[in-house]
Image (cartoon, rainbow, N blue to C red):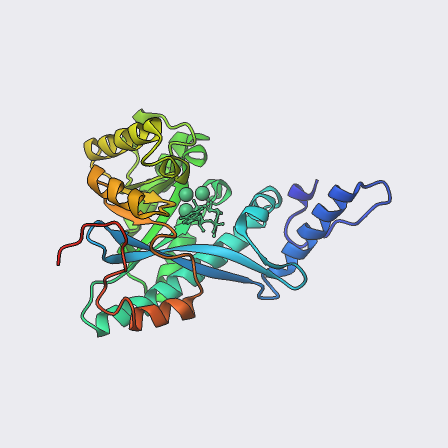
Length: 295
Ligand code: C2E
Ligand code: MG
Ligand code: MG
Ligand code: MG
């Protein structure tokens, strides 16, 4: 199987393959070359606090495919995970995001502004692979980024696969000084007992619950419950997928610490973020529709 074959092995087309398998295999072979051909890039999506201040970004990978154009991660991360390609890709994402975060940290320091955080998604495969801690340490060293400005996002399912091993890994990462958050919270299954034992700083409420706000009573109840749980466990809460003024207002009222979504900015290339930092966001305030912000 391709999984075992590893990074530098290509699989070949055979006459019996159906069209879908054929297309999948082509994509896989293209993905193997994507890193070397420098076809991967990061977009950055702003996160803001309940006062409308920019607090940091989430790095989101994209693939600029020579024929297909910009491929969203939903179309290739699964494949990268199945083939093991997520290991080199994930390491590249981490290193790239740290370098960019360091640039923005210097930008902020020069203007007397608080530094901005950088969140990076980790896949289960990365978490399970021995040596993650060394990879993260090296990315921090090589970029010069303050460990406290790096946040690693993990998902419930990747944690619950092997909670004892994960606990060890997370403790090691935490000792480096990085922050840890649970992504898409509420969509997987978490053992609350483990949640309590993991050295986490933040929960990210999944977009699917934010979608239903304010009209779906069940979604409102779930968001309220997550915020209450986070409070008890002394974790911060970030809502993702915030698209409307009304959602912002409700989430702020419910006590959400931070918000992320199209209402405040789409994921964008670093050059565009640079310009926003110099213009619209010069004073650290993001145009925050729906939020009650102090004058
Ligand atoms: P995620 O980590 O939960 O990232 C949030 C996703 O929601 C992003 O999709 C973002 O563009 C999208 N989003 C943000 N705000 C809104 C909004 O207001 N409305 C809607 N409809 N969507 C919004 P994207 O960039 O397509 O990424 C999808 C998923 O791919 C990510 O979900 C993450 O699980 C994965 N991914 C992205 N980059 C990486 C990476 O570097 N490594 C790994 N392992 N996974 C990644
Ligand atoms: Mg994420
Ligand atoms: Mg998410
Ligand atoms: Mg996710």
